[in-house]
Structures are given as structure tokens and as C-alpha cells.
Length: 210
Image 1 (cartoon, rainbow, N blue to C red):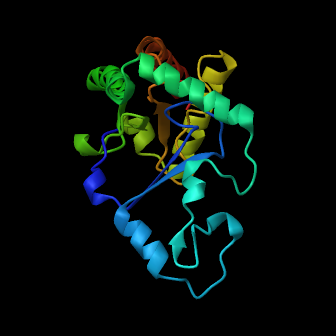
Image 2 (cartoon, helix red, strand yellow; image 1 turned 135 degrees about the vertical axis):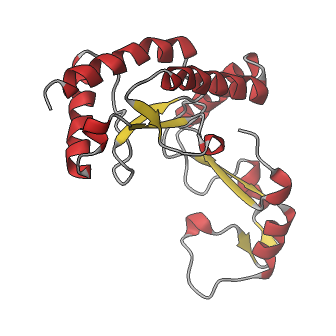
């Protein structure tokens, strides 16, 4: 996604998400103002070695040039480099954004004609094109208590998993009952389009039993 870099002092991101890289690895970008604060302010509490980015009033610049504190897996590094090469081949950031927006557009077209599903976000501007969250709007299900709605979603998701169609698409545990589709750039729009009729099938089959 496009970010307003001029407004951001500290940005972190994971290799795991859009690039589909190894989990538990991330990146950190600091603005000049963030660097200045690191050098001018010392916290009154102890920091784990991993989080010490300044020493003696100076930024530990080596960390940003490849020096390691704890040795990361070089296979993980090679994996993300390969993913970056793939991204460059698609047109870089603009290409990745276009793929993600295409995924959201496919789901939006389906939602517009759906009798039972809607976006969790009421404001279209708040809809994520990567973590696409859906809620059930069918009155028979939406009018049930949250626990029953969650049970319904769990039954839907199990049907899809049993058919090897989709895995782990239930909404976040603390989110309202619903579904969560990954629409990041590693997902082909055609695969999402193939999934959507299966969602209709799973909903209808599960509703018939409730």
C-alpha cells in the first residue's frame, strides 16, 4: 500500500505478509526525527539487546547495513530476496498494489450481488485490500447471539477445509463473527474468483442445518 512517508517516523513490516516470506522476520525504517530521538533520549528502564538501536548517543548504524545481533537464517534472507525479485518482475510496488486492488475488486463485485455477505467495514474507504473481512448479513444468522454466529462460521469454514477449498479463513478471534480472505499480492485474483461460489455453497449448506 502507498504510505505517507513524510508523516511517518517509524515503520515496521513483515516479510511474511505481502511478499509471502518467512514469518518472524521484519524490517524497520526510521525517519531523521526518529534517529534524533534515539540519539538524544535514553529510556530509564533496561532494554533487551535486540532493541538497542543507539549506544553512547549515536545510532547503531551497522544494524541497518547488515550487521547482525542474533544470526538470522540465511535461507530466510535468500527467500525474501527471491520474493523481491518476483515483485520487481511484476512492476515493483505499483504492480503489487494493482494485484491487491484487483483482489478486492473481485470480492467487492461478489459482495454487491450477495444476499448473505457484506464487508465488515461500513465505510468503503476503510476496507483493506489485503485482509478482506466479511460479515454475514443474512437476518436468520446475523440476528443470532455472537456465540451462535461464531459456531455458524466455524461450521462453514470446516466445510471448506474438508473440500480443500480454503483454510484458516474465519475472522480474527476478537473480531465480530465473519470471514477473512487474504487479498495480498501473492494471491491470484482468479483463485479468489474460484473461491467465491464455494462460499455461497458453504453458506447455503450450513444455513440449511441451523
